[in-house]
Length: 260
Image (cartoon, rainbow, N blue to C red; front, side, top):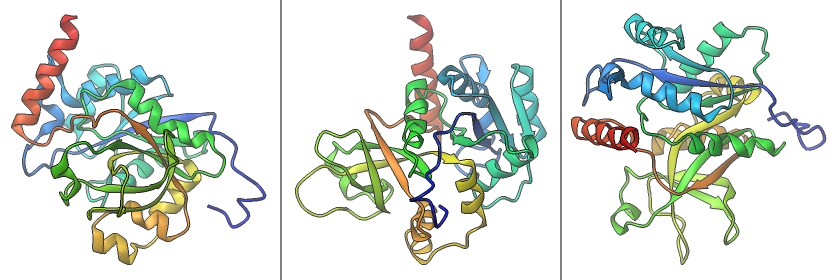
């Protein structure tokens, strides 16, 4: 965020693009972007869900030609990026820079490439907080309802300034610990982001922060350097496909949808 952002707020984004980072390397499910789900590669199913959100153009950012070929065979757009990016944020920034060096796209929605069953409304919800001129980055949370998730370090908690009944709040911190203390809801962070174009460019150029490295949560870098993240509350965590069991669940969900 610029130092004078309080006097010259950002206008709402008017020309967003959706970018889906994908890579073949996966320790638990090798080659998962091309895994068949309902007769199409998983990455194509994710591309379809993102297109259904009708936010803007959708592009897949990938390091492997076989992923690009699958997307293009389905009628989509793919951009080949370097294979050695440290994070999906770096990959999507390279893709947007290659695709749009003039900077016509003023916001970037990052949809993970392993969410083949995500509802289009959830993608739209991630973009909505950028309508606030003070927000640099938007993301999503779900209220935790299972007791075991409250203490699970793999369930990242978003600590929000969220008035009772509100569906959007400012993120003050993210942690693997059980936080905040006291009575009230806890929120599970969903790693789906929407960035102002300038915020994404600034973010990928920043050095890692101490708390980011301690918690192993890269979004803490943005907070450490004064960027504002707001989170929208949605009703369910999208199914991320990381294991063979997840893949079977995704197939069952999409099969049920197509049979309706």
